[in-house]
Length: 80
Image (tube, rainbow, N blue to C red):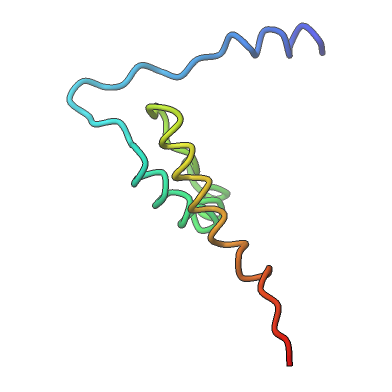
């Protein structure tokens, strides 16, 4: 198991295809907002929830913001 974990650290993303723009912050935000629906669809098809290859940190930040929008409704408190 340890060797498998060690070798998994060598994994990389495939190189981007020529002529295609890499998904950035706005795509990350959009993908984060539709992540629950994408996950359900991925259970019955060959669809990924997370875009690859992506440019990195800005896509990750947008995805995180989009996904966190789903959880913010439960944090509001109503007082009477």
